[in-house]
Image (cartoon, rainbow, N blue to C red; front, side):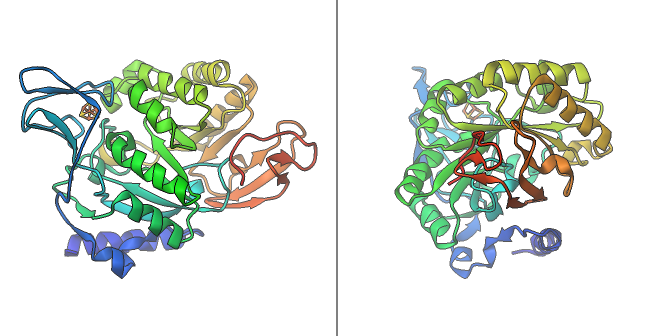
Length: 377
Ligand code: SF4
């Protein structure tokens, strides 16, 4: 570990220890530290490509549809054409391995107060100007410190550490779909859930395969305009909406996060349109999190989201008929709690990442009996 990395790690530790539920940094685990070194550690053939006849391939994992010449990589930096075949350079080589509270994903309707082993590789298929994890999302796996962690080892580690799920998160995990599929199978065998936090920018074929191993997905719906996706993320909105509909069709528990950035995606008319779309296409019981922006990466000049903006967005969603609407990144706010849409009782009280289940048993409100969507046991 060099000096810069050491200082960064100390800073993160101090930050996380200040929170009531600390994120555990696993490099402290000696066995795991031994498995960590800089640069590429391995690769795996990918089935998600078409050969184009001239030695180049087209990656079929996400709508970017990169055409990749021999020896070159796709836009996300982790998929390479080797002699006319596509390889994942992220398989079994995560650069971030942490234990997080499941609420940090954020999942508010999945196993409250449980731990999730969070795993991320380098690379991403978006380039968001407000990315919190740009140091790994915009990096090549050649340039990050990576762990040698095959899927079975991830599942063993999760079980040994008392985690109830394995989360793929921090960067866009569908760029390492092959790794996720294998981790998902290993997780099932050990009675663990496989979950992910995704930008939703993935093709339907790979997504259907992922739905076979995923129990829950948290999708960033970053805005409700194509302009925002193009200018702020170098992405597209339409495929993300298709992903949300496909997750519902596949009956995968789904929660949505909308990070509200001042002056960028806070138009009340757009927020209203987004809420109406969620209710109509996904149902009123889809959990929606409005998260507070804090200055990051290329948007350090912007202020944090005013609380009034978050409250107004939550009111809009509730008035539209959405039943589970949360305010995120504002610890201790009543908008973090889960309320019963039937009788108004507080079902789960939250402060930051700590949950207290008050009136919920076997997925029902104990006061009025209304079923509450989620994975509760
Ligand atoms: S997953 Fe990566 S290589 Fe494949 S199409 Fe998307 S950005 Fe390109």
